[in-house]
Length: 170
Image (cartoon, rainbow, N blue to C red; front, side, top):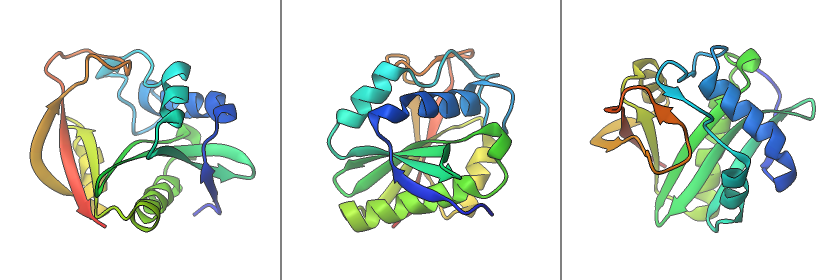
């Protein structure tokens, strides 16, 4: 397992974060790819910068040897910590980086924001990702959300693509 440093993302990190997120989600390189399900970038610079400006929202970075290798977004709504955009460079996957990022984000949400529950939305057809999160203590919430066509996160190949909501007490 890698020795990582964690810090909050800044505007200057835009290039690194966009590279990581779009490689992890939209190329064939990693096991987290959605390229067979969604086309287009997962994240664009204007949305990244707008997200950084929002209150109760941040992106946590994982750095290895001063290189940004992963990220996760944390958005607080009341007692809920919405976690998303968990991404690791494809050539750094399967080294425990995502697990460490997820754990750091959960701890930050609980200790800094007093969140009581972590909430994630995972594509319902990505059973291997759902199984990964179940091993981390997440449970099905039996709620589904349509793919957010109105957001700038790519376009689904199948128009019936849904997200499954999963939750974990913190």
